[in-house]
Amino acid sequence: MSVSEANNLTTPSLRLDGLVAVASGAGRGIGRGVAISLAEAGAEVVLVSRTQSELESVADEINAAGGKATPVVCDVTDLAQVTEKIESLERIDILFNNAGGNRPEPFINVSEENLDFILDLNVKSMFIVAQAAARRMLAGGRGGAMIHMSSQMGHVGSPNRTVYCATKHAVEGMSKAIAAELAPENIRSNCIGPTFLETPMTAPMFENPEFRQFVMDRIPMGRLGKISDVTGSVVFLASPASELITGASLTIDGGWTVV
Image 1 (tube, rainbow, N blue to C red):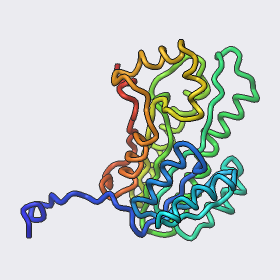
Image 2 (image 1 turned 30 degrees about the vertical axis):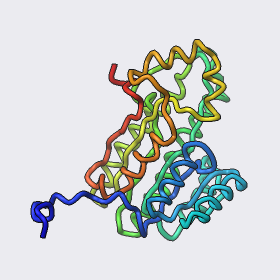
Image 3 (image 1 turned 90 degrees about the horizontal axis):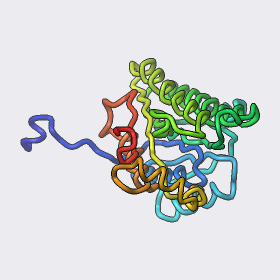
């Protein structure tokens, strides 16, 4: 027996072999990157989004690399679809609860249509997907790990993002409450809170030099985030290496929220 083993100091595994992970918003961007990383860590991945062609592309990439992925077309704002397609899965060990969006605009100009759209996508969908996954985890009796997509805006405020900030603060509170309630069942609930990431979706925003300067002035580390900055954090929070972490929020923001 090694000294580490004798003193219970063995390094916990980051492997996810034998586990089933559900990733919502998995067809593109962060969801796609995280789904691929979960598969690389050994998980069987259920890919969820509304666009079948995108899901099939991600599934093909994972399966071609020797992983296992199954696409499931589902509108996560629709309770009936979530119940039918996610809650009915045979097994869920890991949930990456990721679907979301934003429509930036001044507070006084926010329309009821935009308010309802962002609340439905960023709060309702996150809630009902987490609820469905929790039911499967409880039925399986093996515990589980939920990782919810929050944002640095779940910790601070920002101009033109009142609804988005409200929804991400709501996700943070939801995750803490889930963690408190389901801890006795060994179901963990945590958030990740990225800063602005370099993706095709954000590229047009950063073509505006004033907005780019506004963002860069608030990131002490001096760069935007990358999808790869997020994927490792999700694998960590899904793995045995984080088995005593619940109700936490891991900000991936280059220091935005500490200054």
